[in-house]
Image 1 (tube, rainbow, N blue to C red):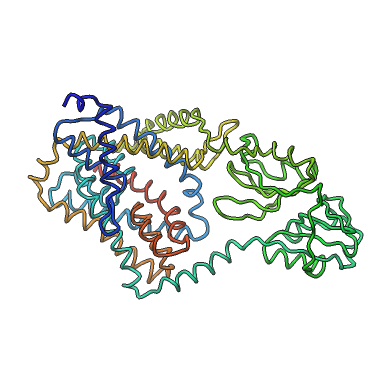
Image 2 (cartoon, one colour):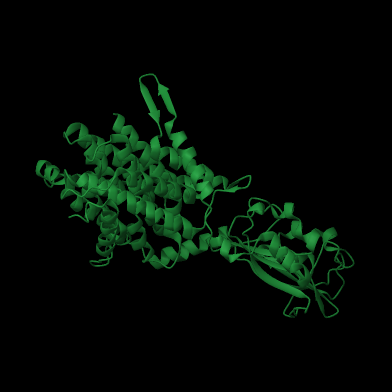
Length: 527
């Protein structure tokens, strides 16, 4: 027991055991990292308590990194079909909150325990953090631990059975989704065209305004058997061959403007280079390609931008983000200079600057301290809400002066995981001391309440999404798991399809559901 009195030893022992248990799968279902809180509850029951400092350090890291990652998706979610997804996410959270209110108001269940059940039934650790912050009661952690198991299992089972209940074939849903995606994000193609239109012969690319007229990029021109990097001053002569990059629609415009498509290839000149270049120079983040003006300065052409697995057709108005991969075509003598402008440093992708993290957390704490008075009602975001709100704003902003708020996926995941582990171990151990007493008082009644909070909102949202909003079942499943903030549920749904439909919907809905849940938790605590 002397070793267990050492808080550092106990902390990492709880984490290690939690990871071992979390990896155990029963019929494909596992607790994953959330097993840490159950191990911590046991340790807490036997008097091993992790200091509160670890709880708040973990909370700060976990919430801040979630906000930074979710920021762009949160503010973009209302574009396109995001409004439908937001409606369903709101419906799930508000109906779950309504059920929670009924139980603690009419059935005499402790309010803090009920709020913890709500966050557990929705498998939301940020919600649990908000519950602890709002109620200042260990009962919230106990409620989370009781509601969580069926929150995981229930979402997985419901999502797995829903296509069969609605009698929908996953293959049909996949085909429809791919059709919709191709319409919204056309594939970037490259084709060669023979200059034969008399109206363009003898004119420069700048005079023809090819990029503006067609939305395609001319990456290479071959004249008299020699390939060159085009510039606005490049004159097109009859019989020249150009290589254009763009969508099918853009290339069809090039064909109308220039001439027929040709199978003739344009060989790479010894002085010509095509290379992928990474955007790692913080000075150019959020700048447009037009502002950089590399075409006129270095006679270099960017033919496409690859971001988050999606190929984007560039334009002078395209803003660059840290980590973008650009396909650049230019003279070999200029390629090194162009690469230096963009950074093109793999190592910088793995570097983590802690100053923006520290400043962001400080700003979040200050925002959380702001109180709004509405007569007898006072509202503040608190520690959790303040940091989350600030991180969402900073994540959306991306960069302020020399400060780059975003971080690489690997760095974000590491800090988030570390914060989550510290947080779960600390809150679980502090709640463990009263766990047995709570079970003796309430018995299995709490499991039934957690089951209702998990299932009823999903049933309501599924019916509305399918019959009224006519949503693709894959998108609906991603929306349900996102609205329930259930990562295990998303993992189960993703295994059902080869498309990214569920994960895209989840990424859109999750920030909305998470923010709304935190607000709802704080409001319930004030009632």
